[in-house]
Length: 203
Image 1 (cartoon, one colour):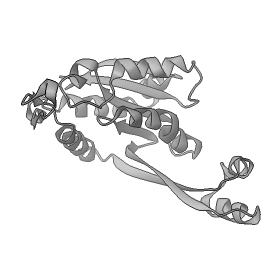
Image 2 (cartoon, one colour; image 1 turned 90 degrees about the vertical axis):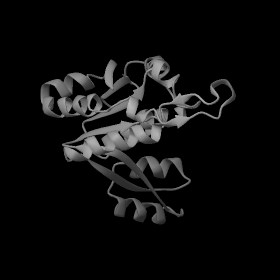
Image 3 (spheres, one colour; image 1 turned 45 degrees about the vertical axis):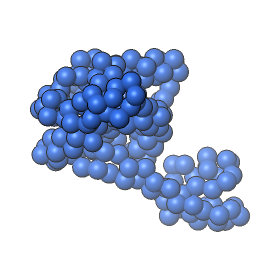
Image 4 (cartoon, helix red, strand yellow; image 1 turned 45 degrees about the horizontal axis):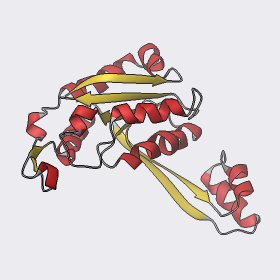
């Protein structure tokens, strides 16, 4: 596999090039180390692709995960408390989880524990690989990376998605770079307010 397209949001790529060039190199090496044909293992049951051999998101994810683990990237989880009241949620957003819970209870609401987990984190850089349903990409870009950035756990988020030409050789459902690039820039230059890099991959 190779990275064939990219988009830098709020200087996300420039940050990596200037501050974390070794991590950027590791990301590129993990992707280039994936044998695309080895991952073409799924036999389609869809009518328009019946019996065609497709790229398996599961196999690609396994290969990518193995590549990141070799260079000591780790999955990280952040937890926080929420409630039904918007004003209370805004008030506690930047507080520690233990304080969030106390504030919710003192405001007279029921606290609920919530969490976000990102695929790979190293030296304050988060990488999400999204080869599944297209809705998960928007969640990563506008919720997950933001949650880690606001929690001061990362400085930049990286989203890796298939190019359209790869997506066409997968089962129906995954998002693809060209559409997600459009969705991202449509929101404007400052939204979401977190530095991001969108990478498109293909064989």
